[in-house]
Image (cartoon, rainbow, N blue to C red; front, side):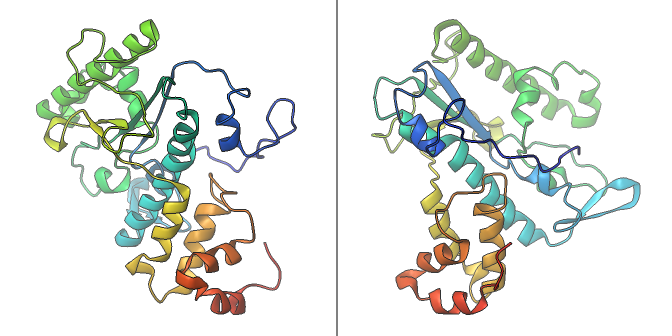
Length: 289
């Protein structure tokens, strides 16, 4: 898919601040206070996992990928996609919204109404994957009338409706700095992110049969995600698998460096009372990668 490991940005203190970037967003003197839209797709990481023939999929005839272990695929996708949301959206919005007058608008794109294709389950493979919302924001799906044959009349009609809604919000945001209820005032009101509210933080985009467009209280933080990982019943008793996923999430992945010590020390401390520390230390490699 044209993906490759690229150098990390360098915090040189001139172009990029030398402090952790989440802290930089919380400093009013380091970034412009302008209206801002932040968002992710619900299943961001599935697109990348679908191209990973080492860990997650087997290439099939005609190049169609087959998921090797569906339960593991779904679990890893959920954690990696949630980390994307936490690192790129929620942690930033929390820090920038200390001032209640900040115009921060957050979305999550949940559309995954893919057609059924022979030997290719796109809902499970891609879901609401990385970049899916761009197909709606720029009208790419809706402008291709021949896709009606692939998606079917019902799905294609839903695509057109959701495209019109997405573009309406973005037009209104570009015009006024507030997406509000869209350009014609007919859509659910997109409220600002608020740290004080536990009810309405972000706008969810989805097809009507799965709830449609609606406000949600969904919040994901890095600390909460780490705590969820070490108490996950699917990882109970499998220390090696727990360490593998922790490293993939917080050390070597796209959103790595979400830790301030060696990964194994941090993982041990996450367990209740640090009970896993001794066991993890015994399994710790003598040379760190």
